[in-house]
Image (cartoon, rainbow, N blue to C red):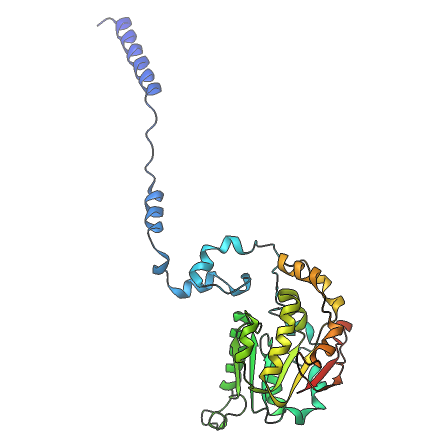
Amino acid sequence: MDLSFAQTHIETEIHKRDENLREEPPAKKPRTENKNSAEITKVSKEDVPSGSVQQRCSPRKRLDIRPLNESLQQKSAILPKKCKQKFIYGNYSKYYGYRNMDKVFHDVRLDVFNAYCDLFTEKSVLDIGCNTGILTIEIARRFKVKSIIGLDIDRHLIDQAFKALNRRKKLLPFDNESKRMEIFPFNINFVHGNYVLKDDVLLEIEKPKFEIILCLSLTKWIHLNFGDKGIKQTFRRMFLQLKPQGVLILEAQCFNNYAKRKRITDTIYHNYRAIEFFPQDFHTYLLSAEVGFKSCELMGVPDHSKAGFQRPIYIFYK
């Protein structure tokens, strides 16, 4: 074969091959990841162990309590990572941490209560807005109450209160008689709920249950969230739930303390602007015929390092 002819033939074949390569698109690599991801998406939320859900969904990242599945679905809509959590009911998870001056728990309000220790002895007590229950437990321990119930609107705080209470119980010997005798710490209970009723008509079924009701640093949050109507209803319900000769121990925030929190929610802002019943009017209202307390006296003023926590504490007698 002629050498020049062979060279020409080879060049022609190479040219054809190059043309074919340009026309054919490169073969796609199989995407094995899609298959795996498709299989993953088929796994329903019910198949995920409940323990793993709890680990990924910290209660501190939620404003309110929701079922776990609902929390996961709305996780992105609850709070951005850099957004500050809004405690719309004053339900601060570390409230006792910044209120109390000592690393070892000591609430200076207990110093005020010490002068009235006989008032608590063998009495049934309701502590409204108990937070994590630390003060509730300490009152039961110090003053030998007959029974005490801590109530809070935040379920997470109530869970923390039960954990603190159970830690106390585990410190006792197995054969301890405290449980049988229903004394500290077995005379303490915690309840999750909103003390403000949905309708005033429900006041008609209230019955006397307690000898002491504690309302400490709570009136501002009831007032801002439920308005004048809500705080007045709260005072009437307290009176109705007290037994004859029962007492209300009230530590109210002054109105100047409200403004800093007035823009937390639209509802709070609306209620703040509509307030006509001010904290300086609380005493007159509680002693009026609409509520019914007979008399009141100053219990004391806590000696706190911060002026904001130096709020007078009053006793109202039924």
